[in-house]
Length: 86
Image 1: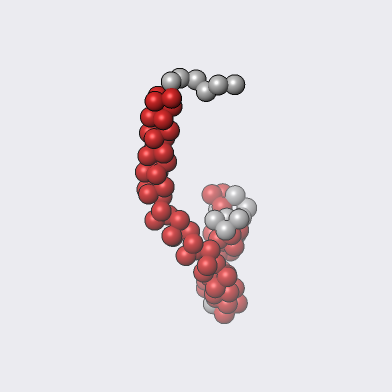
Image 2 (image 1 turned 135 degrees about the horizontal axis):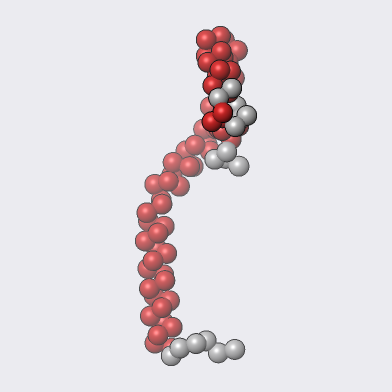
């Protein structure tokens, strides 16, 4: 099947689309960097969380209390920390 529209119109549409996609990527690049940092440090964050839960009873109690809130939807902090990684 032949493409719709004259070649110049298709070329213009492709150029406009390419520019729009490029702009969109430029806008989200900082978030990719932040995501990369998060993923690369996730393991360390989980280790630190576990250590604090074992060694800091006040922190552990605080997390247990927060877990009971309806807004947590039955998920603990570990479940929320893994979400961006999944």
